Length: 362
Ligand code: SF4
Ligand code: SF4
Ligand code: F3S
Image 1 (cartoon, rainbow, N blue to C red):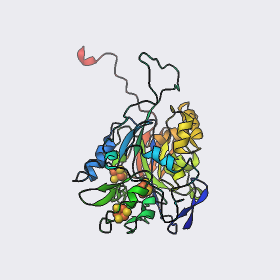
Image 2 (cartoon, rainbow, N blue to C red):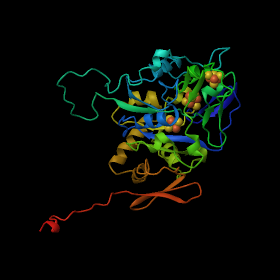
Image 3 (cartoon, rainbow, N blue to C red):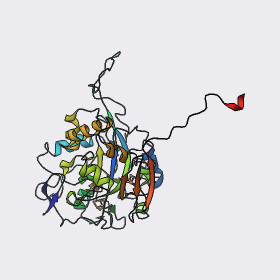
Image 4 (cartoon, rainbow, N blue to C red):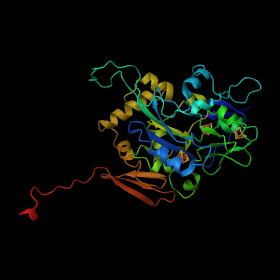
């Protein structure tokens, strides 16, 4: 096993292949305070990529309610059992195994909306929730493939049918090489490779690479009704650029966090945690930075983080991939790879006053 430095864990992890960071790394930030579980992202992905036979239960993008929603059933509860707290990563497998994992049963994929809108504990009829944060909580968690820096799916495939692209870090399955061994399904701790029973191969989120190659953000990002998502490219922390929106959110403000970083994969979908959820739960899911992230978001709501507040206006504002941003007194501006302006968003919507009385009615 080779050793790979995982900045999310600040330590070296074992990895079966010699680690190599891509030239650019695909990354998405999702603000969980804004998701309304409308499932527009799910349908956008489904109608674009997975409407074929054998893909009926296949949702490359899904949105589940936490704490009781899972797709597939129980995926993260089982993951936490497997990792024995956070003592090991999935690459700390016993002799003869490449990656720690488990394969969901067929039935586990069949209830993508299980637990939808269920709160954390039973509520008595007539209960009035007055104070915030209150003990009754739930939140929506949209999930896609994390296009991990050290992908477990790549590590596990005996056919070497899965690869990570040098140009953008997107992880793809080669349908010509895949023989349907499903070691990738077993290994991915996020359960984001899925077996197609008709095609007899595994398939997964492709990071909308044909769009990314054109400088465009993925379908699930640009169709999001709640404007909770932003796609870009993340740098390793030592190369973070404050003007890069993803670096600013993840490395500078540390308000966006990886999901279950203890897996050791360096997942590249980053979540701004929901402020209504107990910190204990958030730490388990997003790591020790959860408390700082929530405090920063709360400060932003009080007007103490104007740059962060301005940047959140860029979410859902342009189909193009923003490489950098700048904040003016009244607007936030995004630029493409060549530094050309791609969008300018006012920080305060201009107010239009209608005349008190319509003169045409005189
Ligand atoms: Fe592979 Fe799973 Fe990581 Fe996606 S989330 S790159 S499928 S290990
Ligand atoms: Fe689907 Fe593209 Fe989003 Fe992946 S990036 S979940 S392929 S829409
Ligand atoms: Fe490999 Fe997964 Fe196919 S393990 S052979 S990519 S089903």
